Image 1: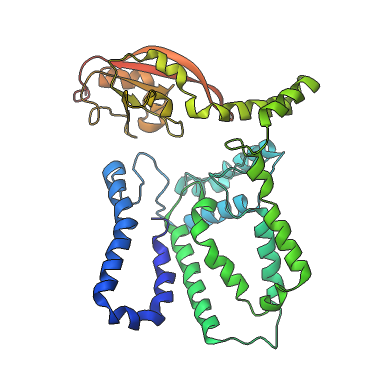
Image 2: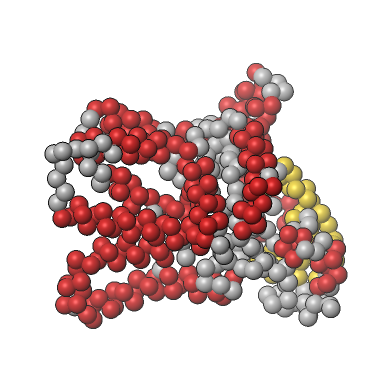
Length: 389
């Protein structure tokens, strides 16, 4: 769904080659079928099967489809600007997040929140791939290039292929507007990565940019913009390219009680164990538990599969109903009150509705931003039948 509007610039780029496509209709048709089957149709079918909608959105997880285009353009525009101008390291992220949340929750922005419920302008201390876009360095370089490229260039010559490039880029901007008007996800800057080449090309097509990009100062700024991505690449907690925990331990000894050091140590420790963060829950499984249920929006279920080949983990959908997927006695795992945002029920109400019981709880540190979370272990002793009315 994110890439579908790009069919417009793709079609505009193919216009000069229509004669070649018509000359070999069979080959063209076969290639088109293979391309569609390998991309759109496969994903659309999976979305319909598991989410009930070809775009991947569901009625229970509101906020992906935008019904009023104006709010889609405004909300996506705010997210796009916010996450593209954030520096790779943001020491004042906590202050920014509190101010951004207060601003979004202000009464004057209530219509935007109502029509674009997934909007988020919060950031992390380090740029994270979930919401990352071009980055501050490249965004600043593009801004400088754009304003410098607007000046008149009398010697500029516009060959036919340059005009075609402008038409294709215009199609890219139209496709971008269509996406922003219809889709309302929380990771706009990342999801728009496939649109950025056309947006960048439209800046480079400005009359004065041909001479501008040959100047030494522009090459220097471009080199520095490329280097600006290195801090996030090296320091990212998920895949640090430096001895993070060893350095944090030494800093802890040298600076006992320092909150920034403790924060660094906690973040890198959580990410180091994230691939097996739910390991304590395996203590509540028996060899007879061949199928287990799992509820978790952004938590990894890999720990419950181990040892690999011994059991199967089945996700319980956004409706919180285990009946369609689990047909035998089973155990399920979920964060405390996970069903409250899903179906508006407390854990006790959900268990009573589906005939289950709580048998254990565990406090587990899965995300540094929220601290330890209580996870619940449920037992369903009989095959899950039709929920009680």
